[in-house]
Length: 137
Image (cartoon, rainbow, N blue to C red):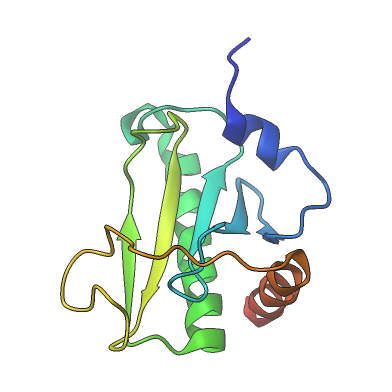
C-alpha cells in the first residue's frame, strides 16, 4: 500500500477546508490563501501522472475541475484564474486552481514565489469553502 497524504486527505469526511466532493475528485481550499479562493482538486483514485488515468475518468475529472473553477469565479470574481498541475511534492494527480487579482504581489507573472503566505482561522476556511460549494452548480 502506498503512503500518500492526498489519498488520506480525500478520506476525511469532515474537513474545514473541504469545498465539495464530486464523483471522481474532492475540492479543498489551499492552506495558503494569499490568493483568496485558491484551491486544489484531488483525484480520489491514486494516479501519479495524468497519462495513467483511464480516459473516461480523466474527462470527468477535468469537468469537475471546471465546475470548481466556476464556483471560485462566482464567489471571488478574480481578474484571472490560473491552473497548475505539478506533482513535485505530492505524487498524486491534482489540479491547483489559483484566482489572480490585479492587486496581488505577483500580478503579471506566475503565482510563485509567495512572500507572505496567508493562513486563516479554521472558521474562515469553513465559511469560504461553504460559499464556493454553494456556488457550484
